[in-house]
Length: 226
Image 1 (tube, one colour):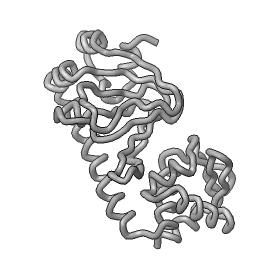
Image 2 (cartoon, rainbow, N blue to C red):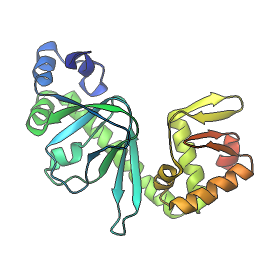
Image 3 (cartoon, rainbow, N blue to C red):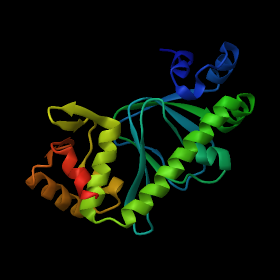
Image 4 (cartoon, helix red, strand yellow):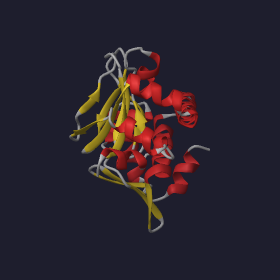
């Protein structure tokens, strides 16, 4: 599939006239990343943004002590790297490919011109950034007041909402997710997350199989947050 066809499938560029789409496509680069490959490094200069064409990436930050905190996951059609692109400041997070991933790369000048010429796209970008900021703020406040077990429960509920596939009376998370990744999403250590997941498994609430998690009793997770 060529670049123009891929751009048409991305919500950010939906409805763009053919001439503008062609002009934008001429400035776009395409690149593939393997599972586990780092796409962006926190603190490095930023002069481009990325749109996920296929695959999935994890956006995370590192504390001064070296602890990871996952901020969000980006799937097909999502974009990342726009903060540094718009502000001109260094990258605020790391981005890692969770699986084989293809991205489109838009340079700063081309993206800014695109936003100036397309108010709807500018509004869409602002709305996306606002949702991410609200999610980050709400998650940080909620996690700070929760026990480790409740943090894991909240994280699994959020993941089920985005990636859950009904399976019998339970829900299968349709993504490969290590226990370390679950820990960083919950804002805790791998050891603490492992203990919490083991307790949930012993109680028959979840089933953990390497990098796959099935929620056997979703109601029990919600009860933990009450």
